[in-house]
Length: 80
Image (cartoon, rainbow, N blue to C red; front, side):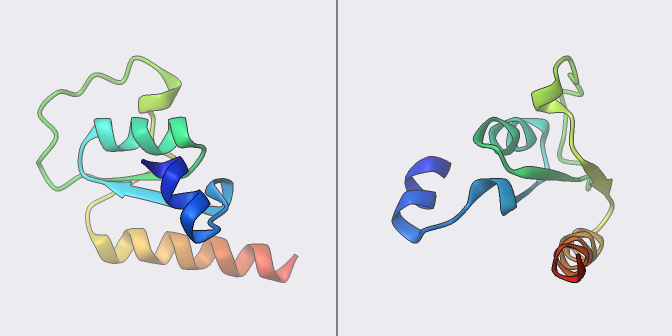
């Protein structure tokens, strides 16, 4: 799904972010080559972090925190 969307919309996955509320979301984003943020809002019921693919780059408590991380990362990349 990620790869199809990236091709159709000319998206570079390594420059993209997956924000999800369960580790399956994180795994999907990591496998596609995205950076991943886990929104820890209580929806995850299976805390099985047994591989790098299921490990988020960041874990946050709110969507606002996730957005701040993405914006700051983009700004840092543009400043370089």
